[in-house]
Image 1 (cartoon, rainbow, N blue to C red):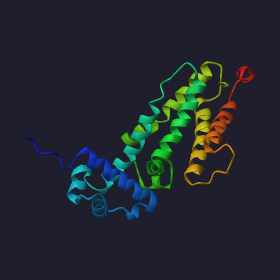
Image 2: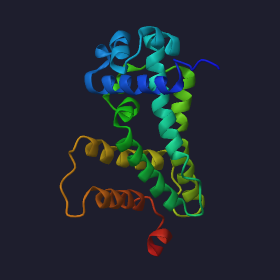
Image 3: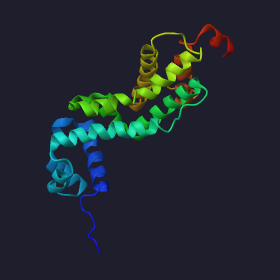
Image 4: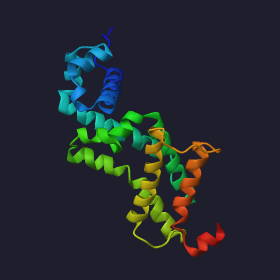
Length: 204
């Protein structure tokens, strides 16, 4: 019978999740391979075997953050209604942040300052912006959004969602009767409405 792998994918994921938690909560100076191994209940040999050292570990954390984010965005296939797609992408963005807040901080928060991603990592990270950009382009082509630079529209929508989520993660949202879910929905509707054509606004 083959011997079970000691340094397997499950251990790799546990190490990444503990590493990103330390980075997010305590900063990069608090992350050491010896401490990380002890926290996860493994050896530094296992960490070196899986990642090859601290720089590679940091790179793996960065890649894991955007990999998880990208997988969630990929659950929203392009449909016939680009506005519905944009709303769905906004919901998934928020769900991703709430499910993996420490990885979110690596992508878009202060913990991201710990990383200097290489060209391949940067390319994979930038690819996560493409679903939003593509949905905006389809909205323009359909005459729903004004004929503006798609990157400007996509950037403004992302900034709105990002600001809301960042406040929510820090428990800084203002209290409302409707609660955060409805507040978020209304914020997304309002953000998109500013880019509608006159005809689309009349139909809304």
